[in-house]
Image (cartoon, rainbow, N blue to C red; front, side):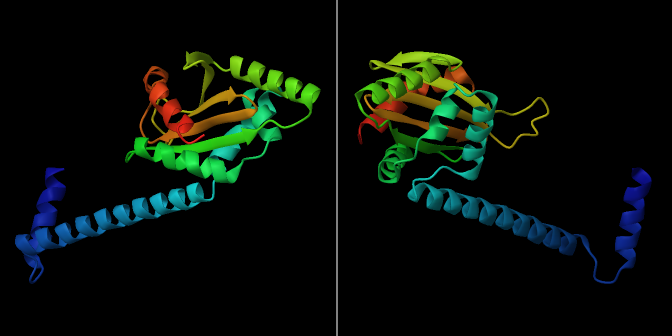
Length: 207
């Protein structure tokens, strides 16, 4: 290492006009350019998320998690959601309500589906949704609602994954409501459960 450092110093001294201040200036410019590139990339990602949210649709990543879950279990909450359709205008309003909880590392993708049908069919679909929610890894009673929590993605041991994600769902009358929480930090389930009453209240404020 010392030998390489001495070689670099000798080469720098031999090159005309290559002095330490100039090298520092170039290095600072390179760092600034890299930082600007990262900032621009983050801004593009934020704009893309905001644009997708304004459309009221789930991102491709979220849809992929739901598809994978539905393939794993035909009676799970993902399979129930795959059968329904997003009600876009209401999803947009939910997204706006959750906007107050978004920070630089955490975002929400709202889910809102209606459970239509005649009396017998409606009862059957409600029962199916309730069973799927009760089958989620963790269920909490929040303001009279059974709210289910399921981890969709997480940082692996070597922190290779880009984000952690959870599905939070509940049924209110003939509606399936919830959201996908996505974060660039490792979110513990207990932390999400503590925040859930506030998040559920934000969602219910626009319904």
